[in-house]
Length: 391
Image (cartoon, rainbow, N blue to C red; front, side, top):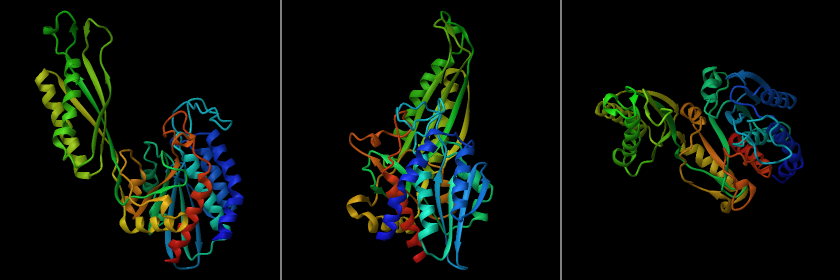
C-alpha cells in the first residue's frame, strides 16, 4: 500500500496538468470530441482495450486479467457548462461562455490517474471497465450510452461513480445508501387567453392573471399534497407574458422544475400539477396545456455496494474523514439510470470548506475543482478496484 501511495503521489503532477488542460478546453454535452480523444489515447497507451463512440462521444477502456473473475465499472463524466468563467486562473477556459463549472474535468483526471496506476501497478483477476460518459449536465449521456449497448458490450457486476462536493473538507468522503439524489422533471405550461386593451379587461381573458394564480396555487402541491416527511420541490423559474403595461397579452408561459426523492411522490407531483393547472385555467376562462418532460430518475445507492465502498474509504483515510450516511441531495444525476440497471453506489469527495477556494459551489462562474483531490481520489479508485477483485 505504501508503494502504491508513493507511485500515485509521484504521478499526480502529470494529472494536475491534464486536468487543467481539459479545463482550458471545455466542451458541452455530446461535443466532447477533444476530451474523449485525449481519454482514449491515454487509455490505449496504458494497455486498455478502448471503445469509442458510445453515446456519441463516450469512451470505455477495458482491462481484463485472467479468464475468470468479477466485472467492475467505474464512471467519470466529461462535459462542461454554458457559463462564463470568472476564476482568473491561468488555466481558465479558453472558450467564451463555456467552463468546467461542475468538476467533470477533475473527475476525468482522477479516473485517468487511477487507470494508469491500475494498469502498471495493480494485480487482479477480473475485468475492469472505465466508463467516460458524455452529457451528464441534462443531456442524458448515461441513457445514450446504455441505448448504444454499454452494459451488453461491457457487462458489470457493480458500478461506482464519484463527484466532488464544495462545502465538505477536501479529501473527505461522503456516502449514503438508498435514495440519494432527486429525480428531476420539467414542465412548460402554455396559457392561451384572449388579449385586449388594458383599460377594458372585461373584453379579454387575461392569461397573465391566470398565470399568477397558478404560480401561487402550485406552491400548495408540496405544502398540502405531499407527505411532510417526504422531499419534494416545485419551482417556477420563469413567467413570460406581455410587453406593454396597457396591453393584455394573448398568452403566457410558465417554466417549472420538479424534484422528488421517491418515485411515488414523483408521480403525485406530476398528477397534481396537471390537475391544478386545468382547474385554474377553467376558473379564469382560459385554456392551458402542460408540456411535461421527464428528466432524471431518483438515484438509489444499493446497500451492499455502498457498504463496500464505505469500507474502502474507512480503511484508506480513517473514520474521521468519512461521513457514513450523509444527507440526501435535491440535485439530480444521470448516473441514476446506470444504477437502475446495475447495482452500485455514487459517492462524494469534499472539494473544500470554510473560506477555501474549493468551497465555491458548483455551477458558479468562480468554481474550480480542487487539484488536491486528484491524488486521494485516484488512490480511492485504485483501492476500491483491488478490494473488489479480492472479494
